[in-house]
Length: 200
Length: 141
Image (cartoon, rainbow over all chains, first blue to last red; front, side):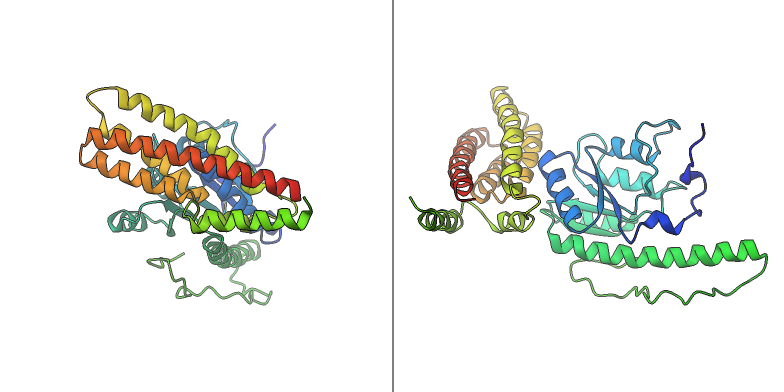
C-alpha cells in the first residue's frame, strides 16, 4: 500500500504538518553524551527531536540513501538539521554538501556544531550553505536563537506555498485573501554569534 | 542528620567543585536542563559520560602501548574524549586532554604517556566527587 511520500512532492505543505509551530530537528553526533544533551536542549525548547549517530544514518533517515524502502523513512518533515563537524566516516561538512546538493532536501537549514573555533572551517561550512556554525558545547541560548530564526523562515515558506497553491487551483493570479502573517522575515535580524546571515 | 544540615553540606560540596576547578559553567548549563519531569538529568548525563569514556581511556591506553606511537590516532581519540568531557563541564579533565593533544602535535611520546596518567587521575577523582555529590543530593530529594 502506497504511503504519502512527501519528498516526491515537496510543495505539498499541509498546514497541519507544522503542528502548531513545533520544529522537528534531526541531530547528528557520534558522541552519545552530546546526542543526549542536544536532545534535551531541543526538547526543552519544544522541538521534536530525532537523534542519529552518523551522517550515513542521517541520510538514511532523510531518505537520501538511494533506498526507496528505507526503514528510517518518517512522515515527519525535518525542519532543521544540526550536525557535529568531526565524525568518523562522513564528516558534518560532507553531510552538509550531500544535503545542499540534493534536489529534495537542499532547502532544509543545516547547522554545524564543532568544539573547534577554526575560521577556515567556519567559512567553508557557510560557503557550502550552512545556516550557522555553533561552538560546542551548545547552549540553550544557541538553540533558542536558532529556533526563532528557523520558525520565521518556515512561516515565510508556508505563505509562499499557500499563495502558489491558490494560484494553481484558481487558474489565475490571485492575491492571498488571508492577511499576510504578521511575522516578517527580517534578513538582518540581530544574532550576535552567527558569523554571516545567508538568504533563506 | 537533619535535612537542612545535609542541604548545607550539598551546597558546600557543590561550591567547592566549582571553586577548585573541577567543574565549569557547562555543568550549570546542564543543571538548567533539569526540571520536575527530568529531575535526574545531570546525573544521567554524567553516568552516560563515565560509561562512554571508559571506552576511550581503554583505546588510548592500548594505543600508547603500540610503539611507535600513532599520534594521529591518539589525537583523534583524545579529541572525542575531550569533547564529551567538555559537554559535562569536566574542567580539569579537559585541561589534561588539551595538554595531551599538545604533546601529540609535538610528537612527544613521553609527554603523552605522562599526561595520560594525569587524565586518568582527574577522570577518576571527578567521578568519586560527583558520585558523592549525587548520592547526597538523592538523600535530600
